[in-house]
Image: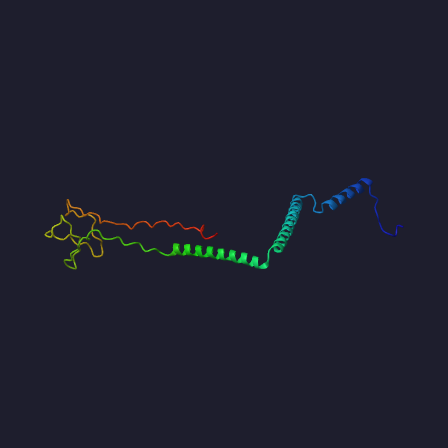
Length: 186
């Protein structure tokens, strides 16, 4: 018997400990680590989700079967055609609204209520200024600045006279259009 193989005698406690570990591994093959517990929890949740999806698909199949038994195919096509028509009308309405938002609106030209100030051109080297009521034509033209420079904002030669700001008639604000899809879908 000694020729069959070497073996050791183990105490009964150690054998029982090994049996307990084997039972634990059979019950939970992933072990007792945190990752193993997370993995086991995920597998359980996935199983529940798949079961609920199977139930949902089974119920939907039963409902569709009952519905097809109650109505004819032509009625289904008619219903689908009506729904497609409503969807198309909605898409067209949205496209029109987007197109209206993207079209640049030309500002309305305000009607002229008064004549604009007249400009006189004396010579090409002199700058021209609008004629005002307080300004006489006998006044000498203002001194010329360097070419390409804008005229000065205030001039000491116009001691008491100031030019009124030009009248700005702003176009009216565009009216808000009520746009909605509520009338499109019935």
